[in-house]
Amino acid sequence: MKTMEGSRINFNVHAVFWLLLAFYPAARDFFSGVSAAQRVMHAMFLLYIVTCIIIHGNYRISMRRNIFELAVTYGLVTMIYYGLVTLYNGMQVTGVGLVDVFRPFIYLIYFLFPLLFPLTEQQFKKIVTLVLLLGIVQIAFSLFVYSSALWPIVNFYKGRLSDDILMFQFYRWSGTFGFPSDLAFFLSFILYFLLLSLRSGLYPRAAVFLGIMAVVGALVMTLSRGGLGTVAVMMIFVMVMLKGTRGVFYATLVAALFAIGVFGALQMFERQMFDISYISQLLEQGVEARSATHRVTELNFAWKTIVESFPIGLGPDRARTETGLRVIETLYGHHLIKWGIAGFLLYLVPVVYCATIAYRLWKTHEDRFIATATGALLILIISVPLIFGISNTINDRFKGLPFYYIMMGYLVMLDQRRRMRAGAAGDADSILLRPDVLPER
View 1 (cartoon, one colour):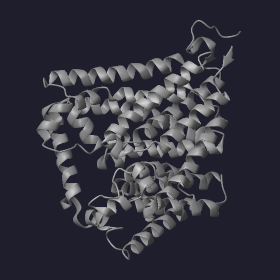
View 2 (cartoon, rainbow, N blue to C red; view 1 turned 90 degrees about the vertical axis):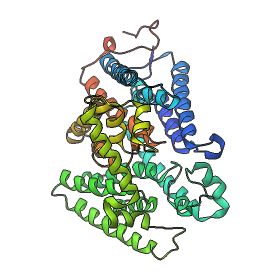
View 3 (tube, one colour; view 1 turned 180 degrees about the horizontal axis):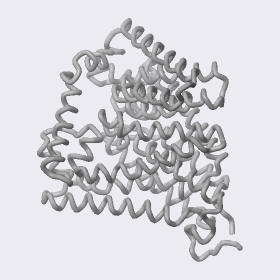
View 4 (spheres, rainbow, N blue to C red; view 1 turned 60 degrees about the vertical axis):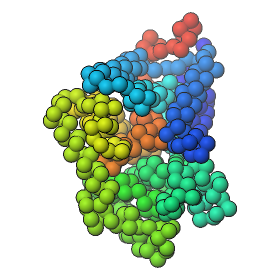
C-alpha cells in the first residue's frame, strides 16, 4: 500500500490550497457582499479537501489517532456549548446566529488540513517559502491601485471598491486579501520570520534588511491600526525573545525609522489617496476617537456580561440586540459577550496548546529554517489574543480565518512529525481513510 505521508501528492495539495487562498476573489459585486464570498470560500475549501481525500483514497493518511480524536472532540464540545448557551438564552436563532454556533466546524476544517495531508519537514520549508513569495505578490498587486486601467482587476479583490465615497479606503493596500487588516495579518508573519532569521542567519543580512523595509512599508500603506499596533508591540516582544542579538535591535530600529519616514512622506499627498488622519486621530484623541469609542463601549459591555451572566454569555442573537452595537468588532467582545468567560477559555485552549508547541519547536528544533518559522508562528498566534483581538476578530475575518488556523495545524503537524520520527506512533496508532485496506507489514 502506498503512503500519502510525505508524498509529492501532499505537497501539491498544499501548494494548490495556498494559491486558491491567495487568489480567491472578494468579488463584492458578484456575491453582494464579502461575507457571502467568505461563506462560499469555506464551502469551496471543504469541497477541495473532501475531493482530495476521495481522489487519493488509496493512499494512507498518517495521523496520530488521539490528535484527531482530541481535535474533533474539542470542536464538538465547543459547538454543543455554543448551542446550549443559545438555547438557554431563549431567543429565536437567526441564520447569522446559526453560523456563530457552527463556526468551530469551520476552524476545524482548516486546522485538520495539515494533519490530513502531512508534509515532510523539507516540504514544509517549501510551503513557507511559497508563503514568503506570495508576500511579494501581495505587495506588487497592491500597487495596482495607482493605475485606473487596472481598477477592474483590483475591484475583484477589494472589500472597498473604487467608487467608495471614502476614496482613501480604496487606496489602502490589501493585495488580494480583500481588506487591509487581513493583509497586515498575513504580512506580520513574514516580518516576524525575517526578524528571527537575523539570528539564525538564513539569508544575507542586507537582503533581510531590505525585506524588512519592504514589508514595513507595505504594512504602513495598509493603514491598518490593528495591524500596525500589533506589529509594533510584537516587534518589542521579538527583541525580548532574542535579547542580546544586535542585528534584531538594529533591524527593529531601522523598521521604526522607515515607518516614520513613510508616514511623513504620505503627508505630502492629497487626502483622497492617503488620509493618515485615519491613524493620527487615534493617537491624538485616544479613547475619544470614534473607532476607539466603539471598542471601549464593546469591551465595557463584555465586562458587564462577565459579571452579570457568569460564566456564560448572551448567545449570538441576544448579544446583537442588547449591546445596541451594529457589529461586534473585537475578539474579546465576540467571545465574552456571546459565549461568556467559559467560551473565551474554550477559545484559548488550542491557542495555548499550539503556542506551547511553537515555543518548544523554536527552542529545540535542529533545523534553523523550521526553528525560525515556528518562532514566527509563535509570535503570530499569541499576537491575536494579546493585541490584534482588541482591534478586531482577525482570526474570524475573510482570509485571516483560514490563514490563522492552517498555521496552527502546521505546528501540530510538525510536532507529530517529530514524535512519529522518535517512534511515538506507528501503524497501529494512525487513522486510515480506507479501513478496508490494511497497511503493509
